Image (cartoon, rainbow, N blue to C red; front, side):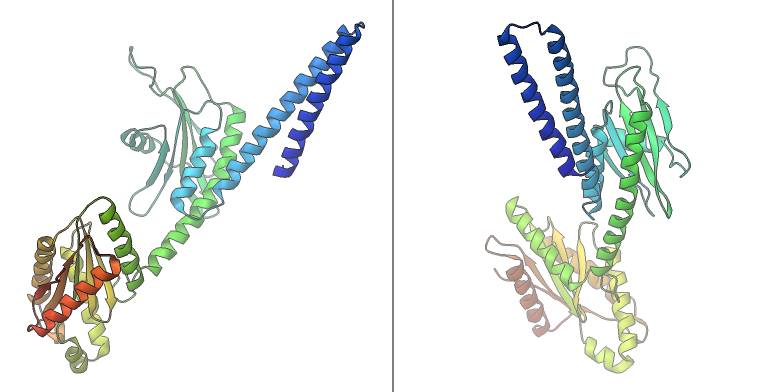
Amino acid sequence: MSHLLIAAIAALGAVLILLVGLLLGLLRRSGGRVAEVERRLDALAADLGGAVERAEEEGRRSRLLGDITGTIELDEVLTRALEAIMAVPGVDAALIRVEGENAPIIAAYGLADEEAARQSAAVPPGHRDLRAVELTYRYAEGSGDEALRGGLALPLADESGPLGTLLVLTRASGHRFGDEELLRLEEIALRTAPAIENARRFREARQLADLDALTELHNRRYFHETLARETVRAHRYARKLALIVFDLDDFKEVNDRIGHLAGDAVLAEAAARMREVVRTADVPCRVGGDEFAVIMPESSLEDAEQLFQRIQTVMSTRAFGQAGRLHLSAGLAELTPEDDSVSLFERGDRALYAAKQAGKGRSMAASA
């Protein structure tokens, strides 16, 4: 049912209710014998009121279902699906579990994080031909009113196969989800599954677009976007932010000596070694040629110097095949109150140039 049709029904019902009210008023003032007419008109008004309520509810349901497929951001798809689920009568909590290659993605409403993880693990992914699994929770005497009492687990699947599980829960003792609720939940699952798959494909494509094909580090575009975002965050919350900008010393000579293909292999190996020593919170990037950068949230110049020394060690202690042992030169910069992301990077880049001029194989701290 379209939004325009629903709105028209609601408007028509409101007009009819108004007319019924006016007619009742006229009949009462006429003093005639209108008891039967009043009874019928009251019944008609109640029916019309119910029709308006049903039309409004149908409009809300259609809007919530449409919102699910109205985005390609996975987090937003899951949030909108949970909103639609929570509108189903009797649902006190809900979660969606999406299976992944490394770990499942869990989105929940009305559940603490630990409880959501526990509940999602308790229900294995269903098969496509399975409509639902009904859950019943039994407790020892004295359990609180907030304890979970029952639920339904529905499989999420599209044409490619199972994607995960949709779980709804109730805290009302004795409540069971009937066929009407199951049909509504199946409709939500039917909308949500392809939206999840589309969002996952979009996320994968965007992640590939953010990576440098040779080194598998984040590329220049991602570096500048992330540095801008981290700079704003650091200023807003008065946090530290450090940056390392470095390159391989005399890499042009390496290329001339062993060839560009072998030189590319050196860059890929250098990136792999760098990933061995950076922290989880650090963001290593290739910003061009043999120039790299590491964004270091919550870090100072001293932290940047320590990380540079670790990177220098892992690069220089083992030979890069025909290229031999290589060293790095680096510029280190820490965010100042006057910096934006551009000035922070420029200061780090100038410090790198100063390290080169000072004899290579070392780091230099950027001046404020």
